[in-house]
Length: 308
Image (cartoon, rainbow, N blue to C red; front, side, top):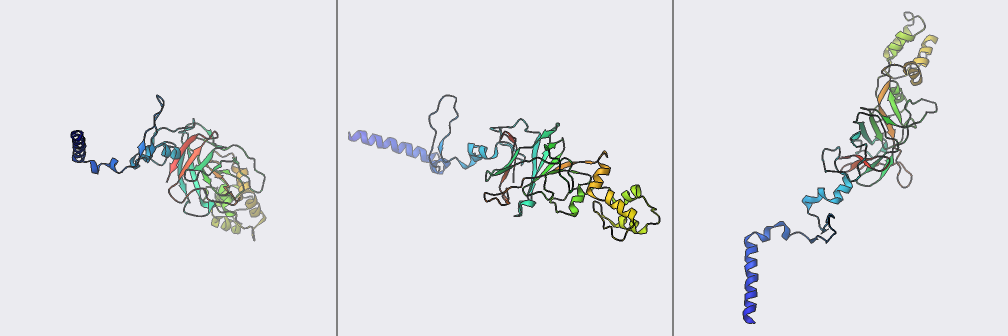
């Protein structure tokens, strides 16, 4: 019995020396926590219990659930567990204003990257950090000022963009920009700024003034000094100049006279989520850093993902 004990101790000593000689104390596994792979059915992926090694975190099921696979932020993580058939047709192009605490300054840019028009009404934008999100509403393809808007589906044509603001619409509705929407900035603030491509006041004077242009110096000087997409004051000017201002140098007048122009329609939607917190107050949707924007279709499937 004594000889058997000595033999057993000798075997243990041999394996200890072999382990030490092959770098046992310095191997990463020596410092890892418990990681046990359970017995599973045949053809079932085995998921270990315990601490996932840090180097494998990006490929773990936890990370995949957060990011949902490949995304626009520049990193590809393989397949998406629940991909949308619209994947590749619309992408999250960027995010802005997240350093501000004002939800009206916080926005996500979407871009139609396919070759067909796509209806994004009812899709959702969701924060990867908090899981909170908001639904994309209907909008006015041709917005009106001071009138009831005809609301409809938001359709992105190939190459179109959508600037999706977390806060509330200055005009009360989501809308598509056009040649004349720059006039909205004379009464409300927009972030980012609207495109400013209205016909100039001087061009409208040249084309539509009904009086004697050479004699009406006051109207001439007024339109020459009026910035694009701004309605000038009609004080101290002739009746013909007032008519020009009312009929051509306002948003509705601009629309009425230029809606059939070849370059009237714009390529950018302004979408407002009007996101509110659990107390019903306007709130931010995205963290200032280290968050992700997940774009889901109406069935909750992943269209695209963007991290920052």
